[in-house]
Length: 214
Length: 214
Image (cartoon, rainbow over all chains, first blue to last red):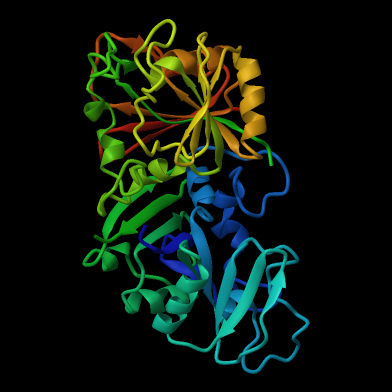
């Protein structure tokens, strides 16, 4: 089996923004409200954060439950781990993801500022100062045959796209406009020189964009 | 996590037939050509029978790769195992599924004619003379926390539906007409008294029908 490099369940506004402006501890997505951006996923039965029964099992749920399917490791940018910039001030703060992070695999956080690895339940965070190629080689080895998810944020997805390292993407285009922030694209057509694209509308209003290359 | 009872990647013609007439060793689907019925799945990268690279990773592939996702056991009718009727004549014939069956879990074959269990790679076939409720209790225990797939054929899916035992169904409605054979339904609307339904058209021409109940 080929090990794929996948972007999964990554949500952007209809004008292409994956995060707002002014990220802070209280607002991981800055001026964008994550509840707006991810409402489609929160409504599904298989959303990784769901602690109670209920939720839809329609089309959106297929994407929610594919989030972890076959994934052996994740790579994320530092801003997906936390809002700090520069050297770490407080190692007791262990990221935005709570006591039981939703990854359940090794996670490689790209940063120029290293710190020791640590585990929360079955998620282990490692910190790497590495190029996309180097980080991917490390993550593929740790994935034990599984695929590697490029978890975001926007800058990290763009960096791996620019390096030609992403095999498949699932981008959920959400019917809200952001106007400012971090932009994944001006238009999904930007990727058509390298990827096949299927657009699949959902009753939730989201249009799932599925990209893959030969 | 709830253990779900799932029908997955089950294909029917636009007039509702899941199999043709006159099943035989050479024609497991009788008068229906399985290549027509399952072309959408065969074209995907994640089809369980794929031995070579290639294949689409669009919408249809999400359904192909959900086939095994979270499944811990399958229940099938005898006619999905083989074309024989009555007592087994030749125990050396081990079913239609080859040396490496695509199930990779325990499989419970419903039949009035018992025979010893056997394994082919990581699939083990067990033979049960049991009601749907009894078979499901056995399969849930064997599934080790995973979901149970009702694998078909048509009569078996109908039997489990009639007993109210199915939680979710993914039925692929294929743009061919069969005219005769074994019919799953006259119309998918027959299930609307008990299930939510989303219909998701694919570029392949298939309309994926997703059913779930509260």
